[in-house]
Image 1: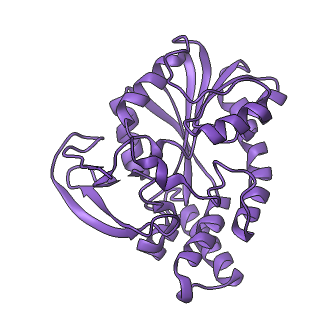
Image 2 (image 1 turned 135 degrees about the vertical axis):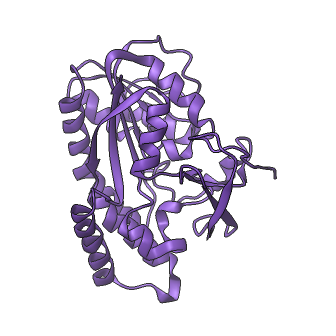
Amino acid sequence: MSYERLDACPVCGKSEFRNKLVVEDKSVSKESFAIAQCVACSFQFTNPRPGVADIGRYYESEEYVSHNSGAGGVINQAYRVARFFTMRRKVALLNKLAPRKGRVLDYGCGTGHFLAASKSNGWHVAGVEPSARASTEATRRVGQPIGNDSLAKFEKGTFDAVTLWHVLEHVHTLNETLRELIALLKPDGVLIIAVPNVESLDAQHYRQDWAAYDVPRHLYHFSPKTMTLLLKKHKLAVRAQLPMPLDAYYVSMLSEKHRAERGGGLLTVLKAGYHSNRYAAQHENQYSSLIYVATKR
């Protein structure tokens, strides 16, 4: 097992960090991982982290619903119910935000639910999913091949939209991958990125038990400030920052589970999600998860 350490901040390139938290991987390995914060720009990231060749074993769980849509348990059942409603909203957002109903690439498409919904809505779809298991299921669901290889097979400047639904935080080659994805967009195309928000009230409340840290699978922990800085670095402008209010409840449910014997029941989860969303509405849109809509400058 090998680990890699980042010596420079992926956002600003500076090399002075402070230790923010130590978080345990509650889902798979029970190992603990440090979260560092850049002193210069405040970006947070898991450091050190497993390398590309070793990260796969941290996804090897029957409960990892993003790679296995048949995963069991009450929490995963809640996830599937929420997915039914959020999928409709995602397609509606795609229709609203993209310059036209043309081609969409979903990077890290998991088991293909968003692609299937978009295809049914009239989009020409393409996807990339590193997990062989998930890409096989996505191929079956979408009705066309979904590869787990590189982006090089796609022609540059041909997509009206590129989407990453809770994916960017998993990508080892953060800046390199963003450059490749941006190059695939048409000049007026739109990049849609959804990630957890480390500045949300539920993140502050649960701290090291906050499920959206999800170490070491989540390599980066974004805030509106650091996401904006990252996209600006790639000559993108953030056109909108949209809430994902259901995530506050789902993440709170997982976080309460992480607290084990200290965890609360359904009422505690509902209160935590409600207060997180209420706080966000009053504090600059600091929701548990956020969708960033970006275009080329």
